[in-house]
Image (cartoon, rainbow, N blue to C red):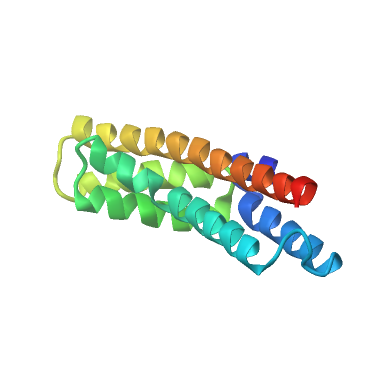
Length: 145
């Protein structure tokens, strides 16, 4: 699960959530009840949202337009079909193309693309942190009730 948070091909937080759910069912929801599963579900959702929007936010923070942000998001969606490389190249290329579609200079377009790349890295680190938090919470609940 934690490796899946760092590797773009493997869905990390959903795997952690699925493992916790299986454990809860196997133990008749004793140490991990519905409330705790809801917390893990919310964290998994947070991880997915961060992963999905990080590149777009990075493009905007680097001075890119809404088109750069939308291009990064579309590039991410298209990148799923060519993972793992496409999950990095797609958003960066999408941000650059979004800026070029506004007749922006190449330098400004590449800056938006670089911002997307930085956003993707920050998003990946945040996603790993969310996954580690999920694992730590689950372990705490299992060992300490």
